[in-house]
Image (cartoon, rainbow, N blue to C red):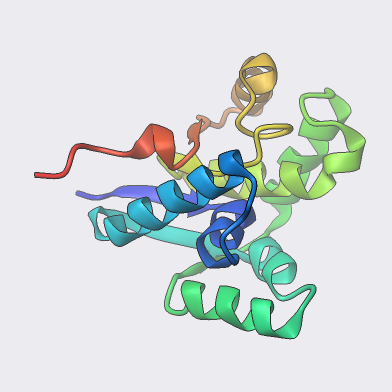
Length: 158
């Protein structure tokens, strides 16, 4: 059985963005493209929150982002998701200014994803706050996914 992955907005943005002159961003973009080529090993999912974010901004860039997620199932944002997102904010596992990040985490958790894939290392894939995220999820009787970047989820090619 394939692992289930919630693909957060930053991954789609790095995948479709013009190459960056910043060496770190350029490396993240290339890693994302390499990972994306091998994505068939996983079952990918997004949410309405991802769709809202990837359709914002420049119309041409938004079109590329939408094309990248074409055919990826969209997970619902229901009551349980909103309650967990609110709890993540109330416990300060996620700062109030990062409300959509709490929604991304909650969607992945409530829908039983194995991984949450992101390049958001400020509020999601952050070792300093990961414990609080996991603790909050477990307090609400949910098992959190493994939160990681595409680089962390690379496997050797065979």
